[in-house]
Picture 1 (cartoon, one colour):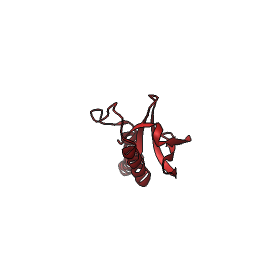
Picture 2 (tube, helix red, strand yellow; picture 1 turned 90 degrees about the vertical axis):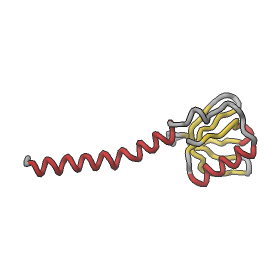
Picture 3 (cartoon, helix red, strand yellow; picture 1 turned 120 degrees about the vertical axis):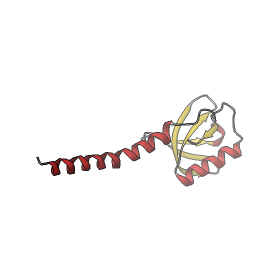
Picture 4 (cartoon, rainbow, N blue to C red; picture 1 turned 90 degrees about the horizontal axis):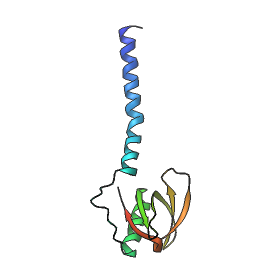
Length: 110
């Protein structure tokens, strides 16, 4: 292998790593890098929860949902079924389920 072929191959590998790595890094940041100082255990009013879920639906953003029973979930809002019910896709994109606004303690964005 000549020097030029080796350089071309290393440039190709570097470009591929940048192409593949950027979306994965961005998704990791969206899913797991939350500002812990902003996260609280206080509940939000139903109107704020509703508007936050509507914004998440509009922009297809991932959210951290905290429920009244103490469970947390990272997911993406994909559909609105009624004024107070939404469909959430889990962060691994395999499970869809319904969420009622009255079940949600708070909604946090990354």
